[in-house]
Image (cartoon, rainbow, N blue to C red; front, top):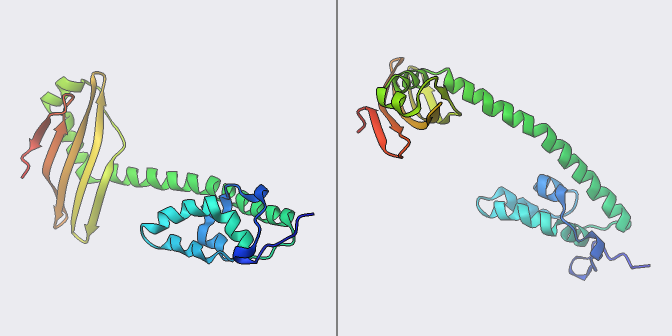
Length: 202
């Protein structure tokens, strides 16, 4: 029977059978690190290096946990890590619908905004756009940002407009002053990748 040397740091002999990708360490990183005595996991909280530490925990998490904490046996170690992995799967399955709902909700808010409505109306009635993509016209997902502070605000948006003959990309810069939105710049990237300015852009 192989001697259990867990929890002895560098003197621990890590069983080859536990040297596998650790999903619990990868998904929960610093939270996983606390009960597993792997405090280097807190590096994930630091900019830049944190991104690489997340993957390092996936690759090396099992080894670090074995060296840093005393375990009753290899099987005990496996049982604990399997629980973390199952919790990670449940967490991912729960968080994905929430993230999607949030993204779709934000997209709907932007599509209900004046900058989007005004720009879509202007672009969809421009003769060069109609000649390029035809009708009917549908709009795709909107990216960018929209910020308001009291009666003032600013929006920088981009989205695709699709018709039976192709698609164009719309770029919008708009500001709100005293509650009234104004389109400062409205450019449409045509099928040949050239830009057409519908509203004069600085």
